[in-house]
Amino acid sequence: MLDDRVRAVLARLEEEDAREREEGVAREQRARQVARTTGQFLFSLVAPQTDCEVLEIGGSRGYSTIWLAAGVRYLGGRVLSLEHDPAKVDAWQRNIADAGLDQWAELVPGDAFETLPAIDDVFDVVFLDAEKEQYEELFQLARGKLEPAALIVADNVLSHADPLAGYSRARQADRTLESVTVPLDRGLELSVVLRDSA
Ligand SMILES: C[S@@+](CC[C@H](N)C(=O)[O-])C[C@H]1O[C@@H](n2cnc3c(N)ncnc32)[C@H](O)[C@@H]1O
Image (cartoon, helix red, strand yellow):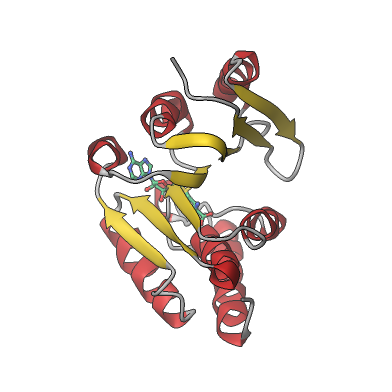
């Protein structure tokens, strides 16, 4: 639900992001959050789904998590978000609480390469938004947690075509998936699982 609390936190995070970019804050310290229209797109993917279990790899300060959690609040579900930077973990917790979304979103702190293998859940939607050089390995770690009809959304495939063109090519060549590049904002690769991988 996009209520006033959610809208207020989203607006504050958009202001913070714009200000930090303007001030030239170092990349690793910035939120590096998705564009607003990508957030709206993520919201519209999950809001119509019943009991939608979402995995987010790269939670940062919670901007994209808020769009996803506000979406799953309509018909049930939850967002499990992975983030390893302690300052971002703290900001994520505060922002999700301020938005009134604690019941719909949970953060697993730590390196996704350690936390993800230990997660024993099946997900309907995966949002992949971590370091670009690690997308392939992170995708492979998440793949075993997906059943037919699950959707994987990877951000930045056009803004970071090097190295992510290879990610899109591999997904589009995979006969167990139907995959398409959506030219929204920084470019999203959408991959629907058709059948289990071998
Ligand atoms: C592009 S930002 C995510 C932005 C966020 N999805 C949003 O739109 O608000 C990438 C985040 O992934 C985190 N990250 C990168 N590699 C990670 C890893 N191996 N495990 C956990 N988090 C990681 C970074 O600390 C950073 O906060």
